[in-house]
Length: 246
Ligand SMILES: [Zn+2]
Image (cartoon, rainbow, N blue to C red):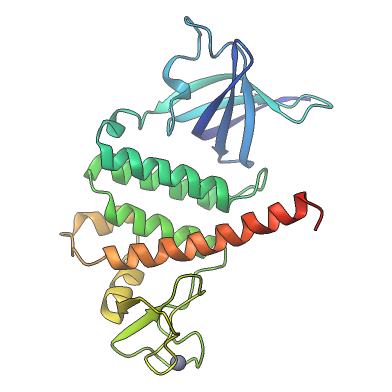
């Protein structure tokens, strides 16, 4: 099988035997995949900093017949996003990007928009040293690309336009109006904040970051993260059930 080339973001690496590493990648051409980097655990390996988490590389990948794992033959550095992770908040944000990417995107399912999204969000974190808006942007678009972004303007139950705020209960798939507010709804989101976030996310992330921070998008971010959690947990439960043969 031929050697193929793609841009990729390194999500994480895990040890494989004495000398190798398995690299989890989001590639531009083929989506998320895992490949073996031979010799990457050796002290003087030729891989250098290319395999640090969140590094943008150009990877040469080789498919091996009758083997599950691909093989990465070599990689060139395009841009490092490793240094910015010295900042603790950015490091936690980067970890979050990895987890959501691995949970939301199936393996070997090409998704170039998700790749471009991840690169844009990493550049946002690096260039603007702000965590909040890049993560709102990431959450919004991961949900939208996955086709599971809730309606941010209408009630989930009755379909009426939300007035001043939308109510959310953990585990629910969207927002409800005051009349349909579910028992145990703990989060009330101002519709102004939702509209502002939605409008900002419809443009490029840089455009948003160029404006002064509004300081009010955190509740929106927590809401979007809850929706992501609900979807990934549902998926994980399904995967567990499939594995146990239920
Ligand atoms: Zn309603």
